Length: 123
Image (cartoon, rainbow, N blue to C red):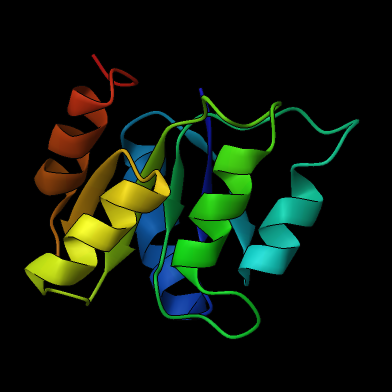
């Protein structure tokens, strides 16, 4: 299965990509929400689950989630918000915007796997 990691931190993209590869995913990386939305345009296939950071320049992860949900071709794509935002208010906002799950940094491979199991994209 294919997935996408969207984070402005190169280090975080590398860490998440390594963990996802170990779980059997092929990973595409995007350094911003704008780049990720561009990478999701036809003729590119819509990726499997998307792991997105909240705090990014250009458009925030929250705005990215909203854009994914308003596009008919990506509306059903699973989105996991992976962020340092730990407040319950931020979690509620992310879920209201359309995030399917929420994972707080720092995380472990097991925590990522658990969230992907909940999303139904990992057995």
